[in-house]
Image 1 (tube, rainbow, N blue to C red):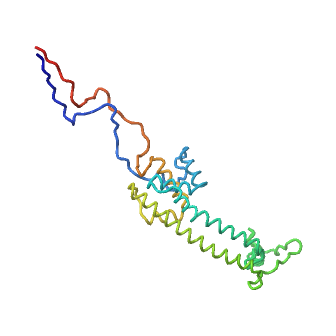
Image 2 (image 1 turned 180 degrees about the vertical axis):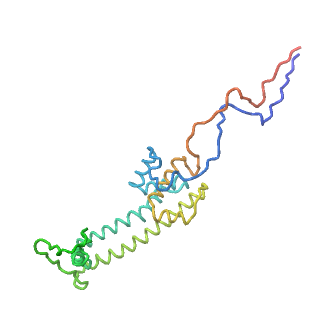
Image 3 (image 1 turned 60 degrees about the vertical axis):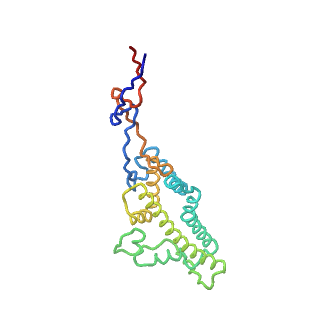
Length: 259
């Protein structure tokens, strides 16, 4: 006759399995300081710098998708409209004014001639004052025509000047709105992952050095493997326990006792 006898289970606190990874809670902080646009100069930092300065709207939209699971296309379009499109629209209006009315109210040729006629014209040209006779220019000095008064401008020129002024105001408003929006997202990023800082600091960072702020945020998310709003920390090799310290808990195989 035989019967089975089960051995007592080991206590759970004695459990130690080979292959367990020693995990530590990652400490969230910005990757490098603000002005280190290329990070440590490695391949990833240089790639981040290139992406931010060539396609900043793509980097911004991808950051929000990684950290907050937001729409990539929507936020890339918002960044493009507030910063890039408004600036290029102003440049287009400025070129249009230069083509339609080259001798408008602000005539650069007349302004330069006026500065040359001032008593301190030598300092403007990099010369020091001396007691000798003034240097006379070689040949006759032609006087450019004075700026055209506003009432004598063509309607096309007046429309171009007014349009340029309106677009300039619109560009400034878009820039301030973009700074406020990006600073708000930077504050959300800090508060979600526990990064030190303040809202005032976020506003100042985006106001005075927006590209550097975008580089820092992009490097931080890439370096710490942030995906779907989860901060995983930098990739590290796992540390395993030695094989001789292996203990396994569970129900052992029954022992057959015969007599």
